[in-house]
View 1: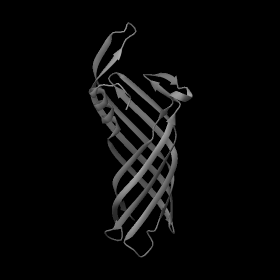
View 2: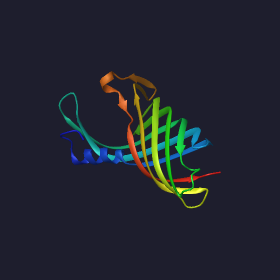
View 3: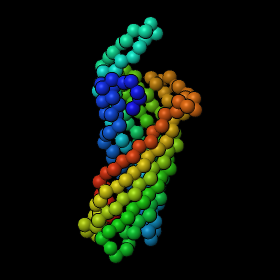
Length: 177
């Protein structure tokens, strides 16, 4: 958190750091390796009162509401011990593809995309032969070098690029066909 911000601003930022994550993957398995596609989407929103100092040194405050979305999709490789004679399964997958970001604050909409990556590791318990459940740890990342705000493109300097890194801990369910 930046130093010197108000509690309202701190709570606003915290609201954008936690949200809903959803992902789905489909793989064609050959022995213990799968080749397929991966899609994930993260949504967060927050409301708050933010304050800034204008060019005349006056403090200006306003209520704001922001909705953020980070989406990844692309080809992926997966390793799993699904074919082994145990109910305890390990899944690891890695994808490289397109990561996109959309943010909406009032009348301002920002969008950008670039090359991104997603890595997941999961432990799953085989409830039945075809249904598995368990915890999953995921890492998603990418960096935006430009964004479009209300149809105006802004190119970021190296020290201003927008990082889209996130860590997720979730419950996973797998269905084998």
